[in-house]
Image (cartoon, rainbow, N blue to C red; front, side):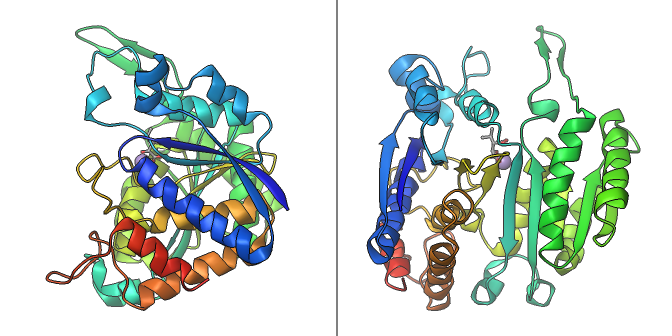
Length: 352
Ligand code: IPM
Ligand code: MN
């Protein structure tokens, strides 16, 4: 098949891992007889430097005809002045909004070979396989903001429709997995969470009676993620809770560098990015872990291009490389010599 992929390297280690992703997609194209075309565009701090805007018009225009978008990361100390009028992160939020990708899928699976890389006890981790479905285009991220020198506010709003559609995505995915959905909210304090809970209960009762529903308050969920991680199948939650809980959950997998994400809407055109950020502390050194990016490429193949076999082959190659002992610095045992980003990518592609 022919596919057009918009690539957005962004900032920090973004360009380094994006290059690995493109290498992996090219390897897949070669092996399975596809042609993937890339349209590289600016986003984030790099875009601010070049054009003054974190999401320039050319980037927005490129989205119209593409099949999928692959993003590295945005942000960094250079653009972090709290008084700056534009920030790299605004580019990413506007991108998610323009693509209308309201469902952010963040799978968290623990490789048996990385059991010891997690700060948690190994016996808690065997068999952990969860999927966090984070609402991505609503809530406190997108509400009105005010700021004066002495006071500031961020409005959090959700509509019934926004909650219904994300719950349906999560419930469908749960139905195709182990049939369990956990909804996370803060209904004892927040009005948006009380609406969230009511909508979840009614959608699940009316449309997905076969999916088992559990409800947790977000503070308890943060604890349960560490005390009984293997109980979770699909978790559905609002934007900011999902942001926080997935960084926490990444420690189950040993490193934030391992985890991919897919952001989807009602069409097949999705946005794919590792969940790690721009990691300015290691940027430019060629040592970033490419696994989160490569796993994001697998999600792109599956969800936007419908190439299930290719996606599984790439996921399998990552798993085998890690099982064979290939490690970047974030996961390498003390005293061992870690692989560079390029060497790790090569170690994975060898298993394709
Ligand atoms: C993420 C990131 C972003 C978010 C930032 C960079 C705006 O932390 O994708 O998890 O908060 O959504
Ligand atoms: Mn985050």
